[in-house]
Length: 166
Image (cartoon, rainbow, N blue to C red; front, side, top):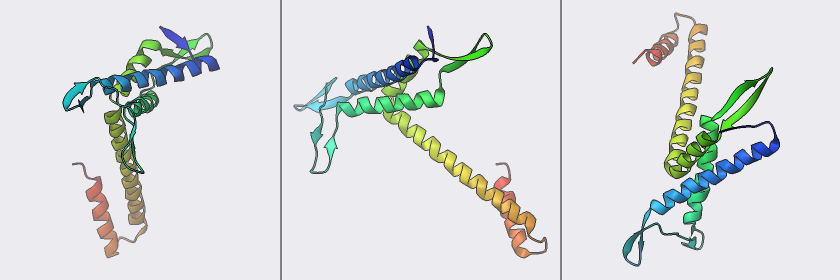
């Protein structure tokens, strides 16, 4: 079952669907948590928010709903189940309802781990980009330095070692 994203109403419906499915996934994950209630382990217990200290609150189950929505929206941005389909001479954006629901429910259900993994991947990408930029700068410096300069040899050795296949 596919829907076209040509009108604002369809786009708003997609955003609503993503947020609702992510919240449902977060709620399902919350119901599977085991908590101590009156000295016994209970599963499927709704935990309301409460104050821990003067500054901090435990948001309980609503926090899982919110994290599920954030993870679902992020998953839509990363995995993009929206297809571009030719319709006559124009291209139309469509989404498959079941792919969107499956993706966002899964992301919402695994929200804490999904968000932690996305953060790790983003930090690795930033580190790799910085490293690549530093290597390019070192290569330019090595090319501009005279070959007889002793620092040139040191920079060239460092760049060659960094670029060598492992």
